Image (tube, rainbow, N blue to C red; front, side, top):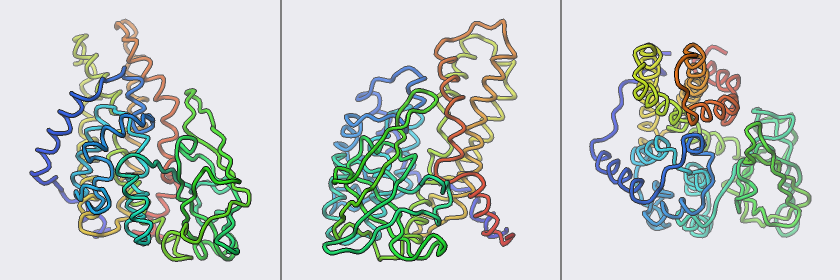
Length: 385
C-alpha cells in the first residue's frame, strides 16, 4: 500500500511544457472552428481524418515516436499537454488516437526494424489509422480467455475468430489483434501473441454497431481463414500477454480517462455564469474542481513513471477506475442540478450535451477494462488477493 501511495505524490509538469501548451492553444484558435458542445463532447470518439492530418503537419501525431521514423521525439509530458488541450477543447481526435497513443509506441518498443520503418512514418503522417483487437464475444474484459486463433501455416499464419467493440474498425486500415497462437483458452496468459492485421485482406469482415446515441463507432470484426505474412507478428510469439499489458498502461493512464465529460462541465459552468445563479450550485462545482485536480495530479504522476521508462500497470488501473467514476458523475450530477432548478431558463445546447453523455457514460467504465477487472488488478498489486 505504501509503495502504491508513494507513486501518487505531487507531480508537476515540467515548466518547459508551458510554452508548448500555448502553441497548441494558438493552433486550435487558428486551425479549428469549434462545434456545438454536444458534438465536442464526443472529442476522442469524434472521427475527423482531416483534422488529424492538420495535427500531423505540425508534427503532433506520434509525438513521442523517434524522429528517424517521422515522430517528434517528445516525452510523455509533452503528449500529456497536447492531449489535455485537445480534449478540453473537444477537438475530434479519434482518427489518429489509437495509433498515436498505443499502436505506434507498441510497434516502436516490440516491433522489428522493418515494421518500425514501414508503419511508424505512416502513423506520424496520419496516413494509417489503427484500431484495437482485444475484446471478444463471451470474453468481456477477460483478455486471457480470447479464442481468436492464429495457426502457423505455409507462408505465414492463418487467422480465424472475431473481435467486438472495435472502435473505428470501419475507418481504419490496420488492427493490432491479441490472439491465441498456441495452446487453448485454459492456458490463459500462455500462448498469446499480437499481430498486425490489414483490414482489407480477404476473409476480414467489419460490421458497424450503432449505439444508443445513434453513433456507429463500434464494430464487430470477423476473421475467416485470413492469411497473415510472417512479418505480421509483433514481438515474440507467445509474448502477447506481456506486450498487451504494457500497451494498456498507455491506454488507462492518460487525460482521456478523466476528461471525457469535461466539455459538458465547462459549458454548464458557463451557463451558470450567464444565468447568475452559480451560487446555488457552488458545492457541486467545488466538488468537481477538487476531484479533477486530484485526478489530474495522479495522471501526471503516472506519466512521470512512463517518462522514467517504467510500466505502471497497477497505478494506471487505479487512475482509470477512479477517473471513469468521475467522468460518469459529471452528467449525472449536472442532470440532477438541472432537475432541482425547474424555474431556470434552460440552455438547449446544455440539455443536448447532458442527454448525449447520459447515454454513453456507462461505457466509460467498460472501455479499457471493466471496473471489476481493474479492481482485481489493484487488489493483486496491493497483495490483497
